[in-house]
Length: 180
Image (cartoon, rainbow, N blue to C red; front, side, top):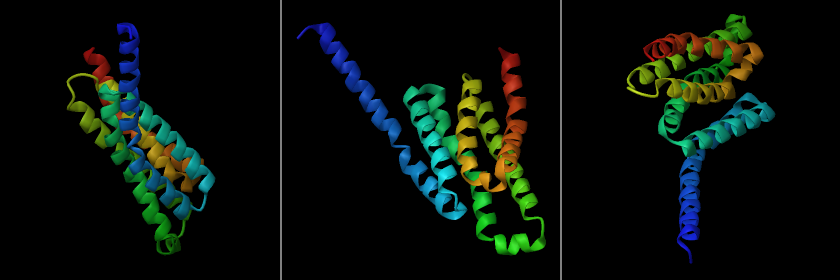
């Protein structure tokens, strides 16, 4: 066996191992998607957003470096709007009795997005290098995770979640661009 062929086989084995390691994130993503499908009553949106979340998370972790390091924080940040919407949906009989149920959804999504963005921004500011990559990767993962719950507020709820997240991360993003 030639050394070039042996090196190619070793490289393929290495990449398969990295992909297997990256795919382990499914342990966290799949239960979120299942919970979203059951609680929200819209499995089509849950499965579509969940498939995108899983694909992006695996790709970013496989890519590694700052991109991969942002995935756990992005999932944690996205759990904030996701969790707020799950609480709202489960307790909707009480919360919606106050009136303006859709407005509550939109407010919860916006507040959750803002909190998610603040978490990402705080983590990115601690990095010496790669903060912009971290914000981009973590922001995408957080947004996809949050969408699993915030689509209860319709497109408007998901949009306000994204606006909240951007409001918190754009200043750090701009500061990092300025430092370059």
